[in-house]
Amino acid sequence: MKKSSTIIYKILIIVLIVELFLGYYAFQQNNKKYGFYVPAVYKGFLVVLRNLKKFSLDDKDLAKIKTSKNQINEKNYFVKTFDKEVIKYHPFIDVSGGPKTYETSSGKFSVDRDYFGFRNSKPLNYNEDNKKFAIILSGGSECLGEFHKIPISQILTNQLNEHFNTDKIIVFNLCMNSHTISNEIQNLVHVGYHYNPSLIISHTGWNDSKYFKYIPENFKKTALIYYPSQINWYDKLYDIKTSDGHRKVSFKESDKKIFKESLKKNVIKYRKIAKSFNSDLIIGIQPYDKNKNINKIDLEFLSAFENQIEEMKIEKINFTKLSESFHFVDSSHTSQSAAYKISDIYFNYIKENHSEKILKKISKT
Image 1 (spheres, helix red, strand yellow):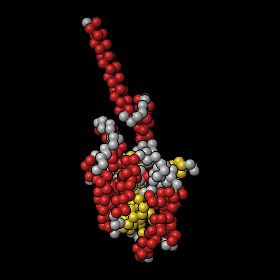
Image 2 (cartoon, one colour):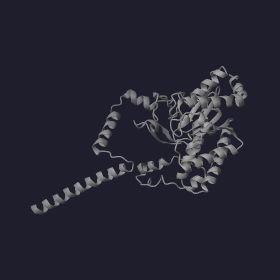
Image 3 (cartoon, one colour):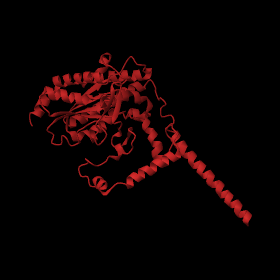
């Protein structure tokens, strides 16, 4: 009897050891998909710290979170959940957030981010009374100001106010890392609407041109171009391995025609929505460094983007024709000096084509 009990105990211990080993192996395999090794002890330590912080909130902190009526003190967990400053999943925006501190060759600089993660210092209801001439700037990381201590949106705000001798003009920055025109449209509908915009500038092109070749056929045909790495989040959300091969290029020669047709649909859609806000839409074709080693397929799509926008009877500025006059930090991001040049071009265009509309709006208040 004693012998049989000993055997059972041994079997149970072996099963327990195997269970622990397999659980730890599964944990590491899950992290392996993201290219790094995370010690279980370290992971557990972080969980304990987070819970301690949660339990240490005093009544004042809890009241601030629970009773906030105007969202000034209310935390947006989709932007601020993690200490690591990376872009994250955000409902209605797809990806948002990102660093609060950037580093360039000229030093570090901090940026203001609003409640939804965009680079703005003014609250969402800033133009609630619709008494200001609000402009929305949309696009990806270049117009966000990835390497700009002073972003294009702020430079343009200052230039326009100085020229029209007012403080009633503001450019809201609804640009975000990795956003495409499809993202820009949803940002306008869900967030930009509250700014009561009178003019919208889409400074765009690079992301749509780069990502198109990675997305499925039906997304291509419906002009729903998205940041391809989002599929990695699927693994974490549902514990389903889907990311293998998401970076495989799905490219056929006919894709260039589909790309141009999709681009045309998106621009028309964006313009119609802008018009419904009583806003005009300007498309700024984002410049890129033609001297950098950009692969052939990307160059073909960048060229197709430029050609399609040039063919359309819309308000547009082709910055790619001026690429040689801009200083680039990398293939798609300009330096601070270039941000001033780009803003100058937008300023002169707006001054020549939209002065009457601006004066009419600011003279009412």
